[in-house]
Image 1 (cartoon, rainbow over the protein chains, first blue to last red):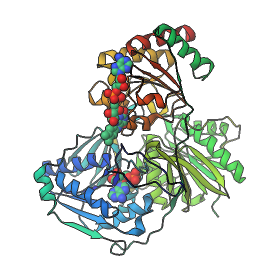
Image 2 (cartoon, each protein chain N blue to C red):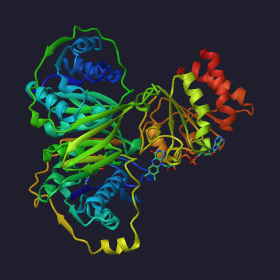
Image 3 (spheres, chains in turn purple, brown):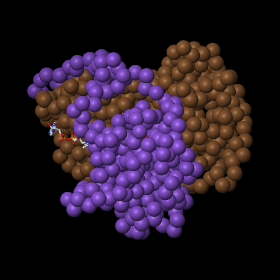
Image 4 (cartoon, rainbow over the protein chains, first blue to last red):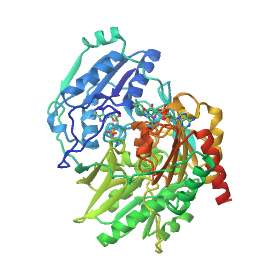
Length: 256
Length: 325
Ligand SMILES: Cc1cc2nc3c(=O)[nH]c(=O)nc-3n(C[C@H](O)[C@H](O)[C@H](O)COP(=O)(O)OP(=O)(O)OC[C@H]3O[C@@H](n4cnc5c(N)ncnc54)[C@H](O)[C@@H]3O)c2cc1C
Ligand SMILES: Nc1ncnc2c1ncn2[C@@H]1O[C@H](COP(=O)(O)O)[C@@H](O)[C@H]1O
């Protein structure tokens, strides 16, 4: 099996996000960068599949120089090699542009299945996996919590509102990973040592024949709306505080 | 010239979903500002009869493709059909629900139509004749205003945020034949396991009662369920409760769970870690019950009770029952 896992480097979920005063972006100073949590599930599933069926895992990442660290993390977890798409022209890439870059890189290698995260926890856009599948003209199975690959087919469980679907797709296809798919492994110390020697191919937009045309732009960034300060309902008698809460929900908030 | 505001209506088991009326309402407002019409695409099997219902929510024209191939939903059939009718009619704006189905379909359409989209938008408006969509990013730690230079300008809208307003229109029904070829249809649904709880999904619930590690064990969720029953609410959980195996994965609220926007969110025994707050802080009213007065959840709560949840929650249930009968 030739398995591809797409990984994005994002701010740690613990990070406080501050918008620049002029609204042109976020302050990046002090941010700890990590692999997108959903991509950890994708990499883990790629590795499990390789361990079961044999083959190789290639990680693909578009991002600035620092993103190399995230590629090394995936190599330390057990992937064989990496492709790093690095070009300042991609700094403000939207989902379509990013997917085009990933598609261009993936087209140059053999692939039977491609993993993405169901969304990246920075832009929260959740688009790249599907667009990538369309650009490669292969099927997609998105937001997946269970996967079985057998006889050239992939079978997946996809939770929807109030039900679970079991869906099936021929290979190759794109699978986007949701929490629940697996428990991502940690990189072992020997894994980290080995990762340093694994090959990573660095490519820019020109090498991939990409012309960058960003179609969705963030014009303005802003902090979240302030919430009005809340009310603590004081008192030791739970029957009294509870009754007061219910009264407030009814008369003030009008939500019950 | 691209013209018109289009939506993709969503139906399940032959009934239009509430979120379809919400996006119709949002589309109507945009179209009125542009002096344009609202068109909806409706796909399904045996759904022609429900198409006029969209008229009640401001849709001028409904393009219906009624064919067994559309039941159940598959990305392949839906994306091919919508792309076809959209390409033929060249709308200026295309809106979908950021529901599970809408997320899958809208993103494939971005690829097929080679355009851009603002995912999970919470506000849409027209500025200088163009769509501006506001959406949370970094799990709501900041917001962005997005414009799309591709065509159509696409946005998916978060369920439960846009009001579904009745706005009587004739709702003319136009049938179309997407003429799908078999080689376009690669994926299939082999099984559907319905959840038997009969509860509204967290992402669409108007009220949610959530329990965290403070619940101490799965058996204690009974008191959460009792309160939820009285309020007509859905039960949620923190990741700590899910990872402990007390609640199913589908109950998790937060950055790696579900992002919810109910009118009322009651957090019981949840500390309010940044990843949990990320998933629920756009709720209209937040209530926190926690014995630790310094728990970060209180910084987001409209109403807080600092006390033992095992004493307070049953009392809330009792008081609510008295009020609501
Ligand atoms: C990458 C990543 C993603 C994550 N995603 C999510 C996510 O999507 N959703 C999520 O929820 N978390 C998520 N987390 C985990 C998050 O950081 C917290 O660990 C988790 O939310 C804590 O859950 P909790 O509030 O239930 O537990 P705790 O933080 O342990 O809080 C329990 C609270 O219960 C209170 N309590 C205890 N007993 C009682 C009592 N008898 N009466 C009243 N109060 C009581 C305590 O005072 C305490 O505040 C994520 C973490 C990471 C690293
Ligand atoms: N710059 C990138 N490099 C590699 N993979 C990416 C990149 N951006 C997005 N992806 C993949 O697409 C998924 C969804 O991202 P998004 O559509 O941005 O939310 C991520 O979880 C990654 O697997």
